[in-house]
Length: 122
Image 1 (spheres, helix red, strand yellow):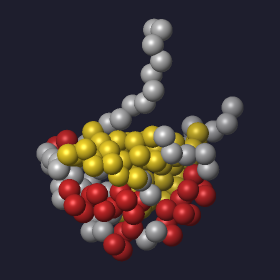
Image 2: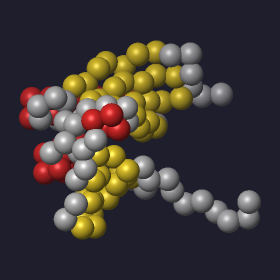
Image 3: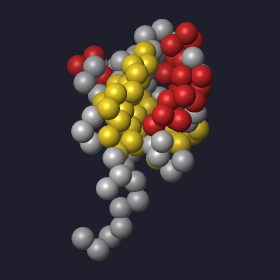
């Protein structure tokens, strides 16, 4: 295919749009409001669309993978934000080693599951 792809931006839902918007800003994403019911959240060239829409079967099965250069450093910085004490339902599950690399998990206030990981080199 001759055309260059520039990004992939998933759409995720929010049980409480205002709470989720606040959570993602605290997480470190920059928000760009697109409409009263949708925002784009970006972080160092990657991002996603957050919608004021909640369909339990959809949100409960949404998973996103954020690849980072150094998962240990990223996790230390993320844990220092203490997001679980600020947002109901938010959970951080510790980094674990897998055959392909390392990853930790973050559940957002709506139940969307983030995998934050680093792939093995080589």
